[in-house]
Amino acid sequence: MSKTALITGATSGIGLSCAKQFAKKGYNLVLISRNEKNLLLLKKELCSKYGQIDINILSCDISNYNNLNKYLDKKKLLSKIDILINNAGISLESDKIEETEIEDIYKMINTNILGSINLIKILMPHMIKKELCDIINISSIAGSFPLPNESIYSSTKAFINMFSKSLNTDYSSSNVRICNISPGVVQTNFANTRHKGDREKVFDAYKGYIPLEGQDISNIIDFILETPRHVNISELIVMPTEQRNLFN
Image (cartoon, rainbow, N blue to C red; front, side, top):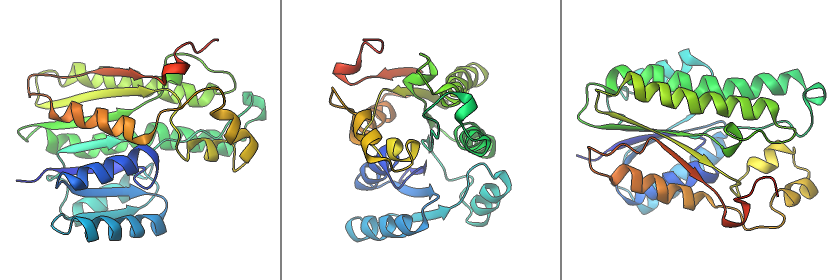
């Protein structure tokens, strides 16, 4: 029986790479993103290549618990999810906290923290009844090492790090494996969102080294999912080779 994976932030970066990789493997997909147009295009592309898989799409704000729960329940997907990729995340700050808009602070907290909590809260009662399930939380190196002008974003990712550890403690006797992945700089739409389309700042974000790509992380996720049942990879830090010294 084919697995079903739910991916947030599915239309760009790591989420998009996971969607394509999982579709190629024959997984059924539940793809969530704010960008409805890109979701429709992605579904069309994947269905044309891998017509045998079932793809559900949802354009929504993942911090809205009720909307997520209603959609998954209405589509009878609650008990079908075997893999959850909590990938959606944003940074909307490029200066100190007094220069960051309060609306942007709330958006980061809602997306980066509440979005992950909501989906785990909704799906965990069903996952623990299945033979084997995996939750992959995409954190960031910023959650372990405070980076300049990213106090809110870094704090949200520090929460995801501890949340993942706590879940592994709480569900250590279950069949649900939880892995927290903390990448360094990945070349995705993330920098464009953070700097609000300022091309010069986006270019500077990757200056001096070759960043990771979404597929680098999706390849690692694929490896994690294929490990034997008795193996739980709890935490990974993945850096570009030339970014290993964050303070250089």
